[in-house]
Amino acid sequence: MSDYVTLTINGSNIRVPKGTNVLDAALEYGICIPHLCHMSDLTPIGACRLCIVEVVENGKSEVTASCTLEAKEGMTILAHTDKILKARKNIAEMLVAEAPNSRAIQDVAVRCGVTEVRFPFRNKNCVLCGRCIRVCSEVWQANALGFVGRGKDRHVALPFHNRPEFCKRCWSCLEVCPMTITPCDGPMKEGEEYFCGKCESQLTMALGSIDTCVQCRLGAGFGCLRAEPEK
Ligand code: SF4
Ligand code: SF4
Ligand code: FES
Image (cartoon, rainbow, N blue to C red; front, top):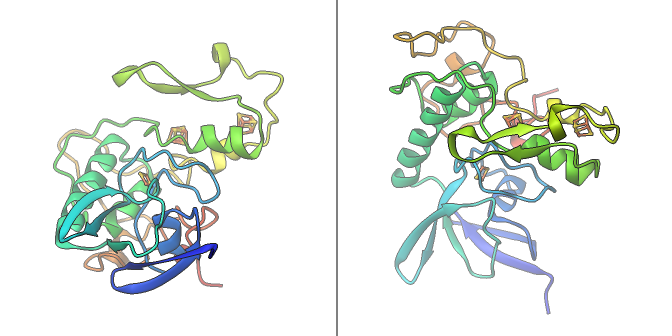
Protein backbone atom coordinates (compact mmCIF):
# COMPACT_ATOMS: atom_id res chain seq x y z
CA MET A 1 0.00 0.00 0.00
CA SER A 2 1.30 3.46 -0.92
CA ASP A 3 2.53 5.74 1.81
CA TYR A 4 1.41 8.70 -0.29
CA VAL A 5 -1.94 10.18 -1.25
CA THR A 6 -2.82 12.23 -4.30
CA LEU A 7 -5.39 15.01 -4.14
CA THR A 8 -6.17 18.09 -6.19
CA ILE A 9 -5.93 21.61 -4.84
CA ASN A 10 -7.20 24.33 -7.16
CA GLY A 11 -7.01 21.80 -9.99
CA SER A 12 -3.35 20.86 -9.45
CA ASN A 13 -2.39 17.29 -8.60
CA ILE A 14 -0.61 17.18 -5.25
CA ARG A 15 1.13 14.09 -3.89
CA VAL A 16 2.05 14.08 -0.23
CA PRO A 17 2.85 11.54 2.48
CA LYS A 18 -0.16 10.07 4.25
CA GLY A 19 -1.09 12.03 7.35
CA THR A 20 -0.17 15.41 5.83
CA ASN A 21 -2.77 18.09 6.38
CA VAL A 22 -4.21 19.96 3.39
CA LEU A 23 -2.63 23.28 4.37
CA ASP A 24 0.88 21.82 4.52
CA ALA A 25 0.24 19.98 1.26
CA ALA A 26 -0.74 23.23 -0.43
CA LEU A 27 2.20 25.18 0.97
CA GLU A 28 4.60 22.43 -0.05
CA TYR A 29 3.46 22.91 -3.65
CA GLY A 30 3.59 26.69 -3.53
CA ILE A 31 -0.16 27.24 -3.23
CA CYS A 32 -0.56 30.03 -0.73
CA ILE A 33 -3.39 29.54 1.72
CA PRO A 34 -3.22 32.35 4.28
CA HIS A 35 -2.84 31.03 7.81
CA LEU A 36 -2.07 32.32 11.26
CA CYS A 37 -2.28 29.74 14.03
CA HIS A 38 -0.73 26.87 12.09
CA MET A 39 2.93 25.92 12.32
CA SER A 40 4.09 22.97 10.26
CA ASP A 41 5.28 20.05 12.40
CA LEU A 42 3.20 21.16 15.38
CA THR A 43 -0.26 19.87 16.19
CA PRO A 44 -2.82 21.97 14.32
CA ILE A 45 -5.58 23.44 16.46
CA GLY A 46 -7.74 25.23 13.91
CA ALA A 47 -7.99 28.38 16.01
CA CYS A 48 -7.87 31.26 13.55
CA ARG A 49 -9.97 29.85 10.65
CA LEU A 50 -7.96 31.85 8.12
CA CYS A 51 -6.96 28.70 6.27
CA ILE A 52 -10.49 27.71 5.28
CA VAL A 53 -11.02 25.86 1.99
CA GLU A 54 -13.89 24.14 0.19
CA VAL A 55 -13.86 20.35 0.13
CA VAL A 56 -15.85 19.15 -2.88
CA GLU A 57 -17.48 15.75 -2.77
CA ASN A 58 -20.35 14.35 -4.84
CA GLY A 59 -21.18 17.77 -6.23
CA LYS A 60 -21.46 19.32 -2.76
CA SER A 61 -18.93 21.45 -0.97
CA GLU A 62 -18.13 21.97 2.65
CA VAL A 63 -16.08 24.81 4.12
CA THR A 64 -13.50 23.75 6.67
CA ALA A 65 -10.11 24.70 8.06
CA SER A 66 -7.35 23.13 5.96
CA CYS A 67 -4.78 22.84 8.75
CA THR A 68 -6.89 20.33 10.65
CA LEU A 69 -8.01 18.47 7.52
CA GLU A 70 -6.02 15.38 6.61
CA ALA A 71 -5.24 14.99 2.91
CA LYS A 72 -6.99 11.91 1.53
CA GLU A 73 -6.67 10.04 -1.74
CA GLY A 74 -8.82 11.60 -4.47
CA MET A 75 -9.84 14.63 -2.42
CA THR A 76 -10.81 17.79 -4.30
CA ILE A 77 -9.95 21.05 -2.58
CA LEU A 78 -10.74 24.56 -3.75
CA ALA A 79 -8.78 27.11 -1.79
CA HIS A 80 -9.55 30.36 -3.57
CA THR A 81 -13.20 30.35 -4.65
CA ASP A 82 -15.20 33.57 -4.37
CA LYS A 83 -17.00 32.13 -1.35
CA ILE A 84 -13.73 31.33 0.42
CA LEU A 85 -12.07 34.63 -0.46
CA LYS A 86 -15.04 36.54 0.95
CA ALA A 87 -15.22 34.51 4.16
CA ARG A 88 -11.45 34.61 4.65
CA LYS A 89 -11.39 38.35 4.13
CA ASN A 90 -14.02 38.78 6.86
CA ILE A 91 -12.04 36.57 9.23
CA ALA A 92 -8.86 38.52 8.51
CA GLU A 93 -10.65 41.82 9.02
CA MET A 94 -11.89 40.66 12.41
CA LEU A 95 -8.38 39.57 13.37
CA VAL A 96 -7.02 43.01 12.52
CA ALA A 97 -9.76 44.58 14.62
CA GLU A 98 -8.73 42.35 17.53
CA ALA A 99 -5.05 43.21 17.28
CA PRO A 100 -4.39 46.12 14.92
CA ASN A 101 -0.88 46.61 16.25
CA SER A 102 0.28 43.27 14.87
CA ARG A 103 2.02 43.97 11.62
CA ALA A 104 2.13 40.26 10.88
CA ILE A 105 -1.65 40.15 11.10
CA GLN A 106 -1.96 43.27 9.01
CA ASP A 107 0.16 41.69 6.32
CA VAL A 108 -1.68 38.41 6.27
CA ALA A 109 -4.91 40.42 6.14
CA VAL A 110 -3.67 42.30 3.12
CA ARG A 111 -3.02 38.99 1.45
CA CYS A 112 -6.69 38.25 2.07
CA GLY A 113 -7.71 41.51 0.39
CA VAL A 114 -8.42 43.61 3.46
CA THR A 115 -7.81 47.30 2.88
CA GLU A 116 -9.97 48.77 5.59
CA VAL A 117 -11.48 47.53 8.82
CA ARG A 118 -15.17 48.01 9.51
CA PHE A 119 -15.05 46.88 13.11
CA PRO A 120 -13.90 48.87 16.16
CA PHE A 121 -10.31 48.16 17.16
CA ARG A 122 -10.01 46.16 20.37
CA ASN A 123 -6.23 46.47 20.75
CA LYS A 124 -5.73 43.02 22.24
CA ASN A 125 -2.20 41.84 22.88
CA CYS A 126 -3.02 38.21 22.09
CA VAL A 127 -5.20 36.61 19.42
CA LEU A 128 -5.24 33.19 21.10
CA CYS A 129 -3.48 31.46 18.22
CA GLY A 130 -1.77 29.06 20.63
CA ARG A 131 1.54 29.11 18.75
CA CYS A 132 3.50 29.95 21.90
CA ILE A 133 1.89 27.15 23.88
CA ARG A 134 2.52 24.52 21.24
CA VAL A 135 6.12 25.52 20.56
CA CYS A 136 6.75 25.43 24.29
CA SER A 137 5.22 22.01 24.83
CA GLU A 138 5.97 20.26 21.54
CA VAL A 139 9.41 21.61 20.62
CA TRP A 140 10.85 22.25 24.07
CA GLN A 141 8.72 19.81 26.09
CA ALA A 142 8.57 22.51 28.74
CA ASN A 143 4.79 22.90 29.15
CA ALA A 144 5.36 26.25 30.77
CA LEU A 145 2.44 27.98 29.06
CA GLY A 146 -1.23 27.23 28.74
CA PHE A 147 -4.63 28.70 28.03
CA VAL A 148 -6.52 29.83 31.11
CA GLY A 149 -10.13 30.95 31.44
CA ARG A 150 -13.07 30.77 29.10
CA GLY A 151 -14.79 33.00 26.59
CA LYS A 152 -13.67 36.58 26.73
CA ASP A 153 -11.48 35.83 29.77
CA ARG A 154 -9.43 33.23 27.91
CA HIS A 155 -5.74 34.10 27.85
CA VAL A 156 -2.26 32.61 27.82
CA ALA A 157 -0.60 32.31 31.21
CA LEU A 158 2.37 30.89 33.06
CA PRO A 159 1.56 28.64 36.03
CA PHE A 160 0.45 30.87 38.91
CA HIS A 161 1.59 33.82 36.75
CA ASN A 162 5.24 33.13 37.57
CA ARG A 163 7.95 31.86 35.26
CA PRO A 164 8.60 28.33 36.50
CA GLU A 165 11.98 26.70 36.98
CA PHE A 166 11.25 24.37 34.10
CA CYS A 167 10.92 27.25 31.60
CA LYS A 168 13.99 26.82 29.40
CA ARG A 169 14.36 30.52 28.65
CA CYS A 170 14.50 29.68 24.96
CA TRP A 171 12.14 32.57 24.08
CA SER A 172 10.67 30.58 21.23
CA CYS A 173 7.27 31.60 22.54
CA LEU A 174 8.13 35.20 21.70
CA GLU A 175 9.68 34.36 18.35
CA VAL A 176 6.59 32.65 17.02
CA CYS A 177 4.03 35.10 18.38
CA PRO A 178 2.39 37.20 15.64
CA MET A 179 2.10 40.03 18.14
CA THR A 180 5.83 40.42 18.57
CA ILE A 181 6.99 40.52 14.95
CA THR A 182 7.88 44.17 14.50
CA PRO A 183 4.75 45.61 16.11
CA CYS A 184 2.96 48.43 14.37
CA ASP A 185 2.49 51.69 16.24
CA GLY A 186 0.13 53.14 13.67
CA PRO A 187 -3.40 54.39 14.17
CA MET A 188 -5.27 52.30 16.69
CA LYS A 189 -7.75 54.86 17.92
CA GLU A 190 -11.48 54.88 17.74
CA GLY A 191 -12.54 56.49 14.50
CA GLU A 192 -9.20 55.70 12.90
CA GLU A 193 -9.79 52.09 12.01
CA TYR A 194 -7.72 52.00 8.86
CA PHE A 195 -4.36 50.86 7.63
CA CYS A 196 -2.08 53.80 7.26
CA GLY A 197 0.39 51.88 5.08
CA LYS A 198 3.22 54.16 6.18
CA CYS A 199 5.37 51.47 7.74
CA GLU A 200 7.64 48.99 6.07
CA SER A 201 5.01 46.30 5.99
CA GLN A 202 3.92 44.90 2.66
CA LEU A 203 0.58 46.66 2.82
CA THR A 204 0.98 49.24 0.13
CA MET A 205 2.84 46.91 -2.22
CA ALA A 206 0.17 44.28 -1.93
CA LEU A 207 -2.94 46.31 -2.64
CA GLY A 208 -4.91 44.63 -5.36
CA SER A 209 -2.86 41.44 -5.31
CA ILE A 210 -5.01 39.04 -3.39
CA ASP A 211 -3.45 35.61 -2.92
CA THR A 212 0.02 36.70 -3.90
CA CYS A 213 2.77 36.35 -1.35
CA VAL A 214 3.35 39.55 0.58
CA GLN A 215 6.04 38.03 2.79
CA CYS A 216 3.74 38.35 5.76
CA ARG A 217 6.47 37.04 8.07
CA LEU A 218 4.10 34.33 9.19
CA GLY A 219 5.92 32.32 6.60
CA ALA A 220 9.54 33.28 7.05
CA GLY A 221 10.75 30.98 9.75
CA PHE A 222 7.24 29.77 10.30
CA GLY A 223 6.90 27.17 7.60
CA CYS A 224 5.47 28.82 4.50
CA LEU A 225 8.10 28.34 1.85
CA ARG A 226 6.57 30.88 -0.48
CA ALA A 227 6.83 33.63 2.06
CA GLU A 228 10.56 33.44 2.59
CA PRO A 229 12.22 36.71 1.73
CA GLU A 230 14.31 36.65 -1.41
CA LYS A 231 18.01 36.37 -0.74
S1 SF4 B 1 10.90 30.62 27.04
FE1 SF4 B 1 9.92 29.21 28.53
S2 SF4 B 1 7.73 29.57 28.18
FE2 SF4 B 1 8.78 30.34 26.34
S3 SF4 B 1 8.84 28.61 24.89
FE3 SF4 B 1 10.77 28.57 26.04
S4 SF4 B 1 10.35 27.15 27.70
FE4 SF4 B 1 8.34 27.78 26.93
S1 SF4 C 1 0.71 35.15 23.10
FE1 SF4 C 1 1.09 35.32 20.88
S2 SF4 C 1 1.60 33.24 20.20
FE2 SF4 C 1 0.63 33.04 22.21
S3 SF4 C 1 -1.54 32.71 21.77
FE3 SF4 C 1 -1.29 34.92 22.06
S4 SF4 C 1 -0.95 35.75 19.99
FE4 SF4 C 1 -0.62 33.52 19.88
S1 FES D 1 -4.14 28.20 10.23
FE1 FES D 1 -5.80 26.80 10.11
S2 FES D 1 -7.22 27.55 11.55
FE2 FES D 1 -5.48 28.82 11.81
